[in-house]
Structure formats: structure tokens, C-alpha cells
Image 1 (cartoon, rainbow, N blue to C red):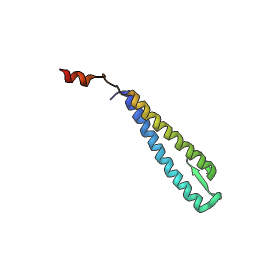
Image 2: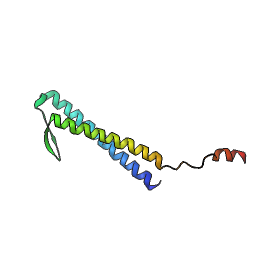
Image 3: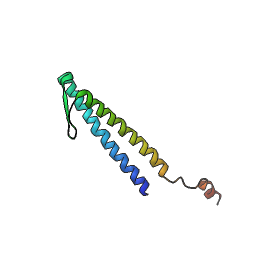
Image 4: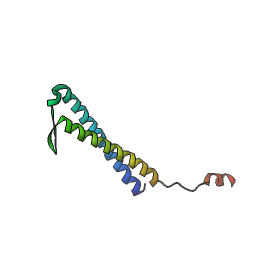
Length: 95
């Protein structure tokens, strides 16, 4: 496997992990919104406590970024693969 392929596969894995983590966070936010209504507060480990509106904006922005990175890395992985020699199958049949 070439290093270019490995780079895009690793990026794809990281983006998928982030998408999964943010999906769980969105589920938690939905539960908090159902229980506390508009007075709910969500605590992010790095940036601290935020209201539900701010939290939804951060989570859905992150989901969009992760989806874009996943799609981009798949497209770049397809470009990184060698296409091979065209017509090699027909030449092999002629011999």
C-alpha cells in the first residue's frame, strides 16, 4: 500500500470516529432538551458549559465538517490508486 493511500484511509477513519462521537452528543442534547426544555445546559470538556442552541450549532457544524472530510478522503483515495494499463486484458487474450 502506498503512503498516499494510507494517509487518506487514516483521515477517513478519524472523520468517521468524529462523526460517531458527534452523533452520540446530538442524542444526548436531544435528551437534555426533552427533559429541561430551553433551560438546558450542556458541558463540553474543552470549551465549557454552553446553552442548548450553541451546543446544537457546534454539533451540527462538526457533523457537516466530518461528513465533508469523509467524502473528500474517499474521492482522494480513489484518485491515489493507479489505474493500470488500459487494454491489457485484450492483449493477454491475443497471445
